[in-house]
Amino acid sequence: MGAGVIAVGLVALAAVRARDEAAEAVTRLALTRSEVDRQSARLNALAARRVPPGGAVASSSPARVVAAIAAVLPPDARLERLAIDYARGTAIEMQVVTRGAPAWDRLLERLERSPQLREVVPGPESREGAVRSVVRARWAGGAR
Image (cartoon, rainbow, N blue to C red; front, side):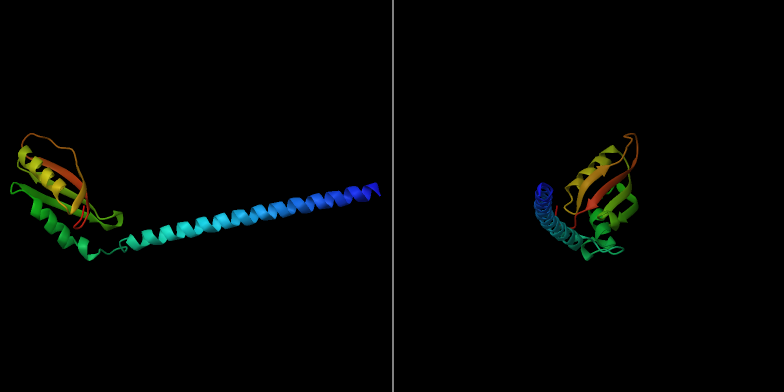
């Protein structure tokens, strides 16, 4: 009889532990579903803002980017090469040449003040004679 009582007690203890584990599993499942729903909503919001692969939206067309850069070029500066990378958030890389340091300074100032560009980062420069360098920026469209 003593063995039967012990066996019943062990079975009851196992049943209580199983019930507690099941309750914890249900709680973890609810938290996981909530996190999945939250992350799905975040992913959908990010996807909605993404530029379609291989294509540009009208506000960042190559013609608009070139026109915006041409509008800020000083007369003694020249754009030698332009690369636009739409896959990296419309990253722009410009190879520019100016007749001298004053023109280089004017160019950088105009690029930084342009409402169509943000994150303007000039490359290395030599202040003797003509300045030839690379400037990187991001297209902001019409807003900064």
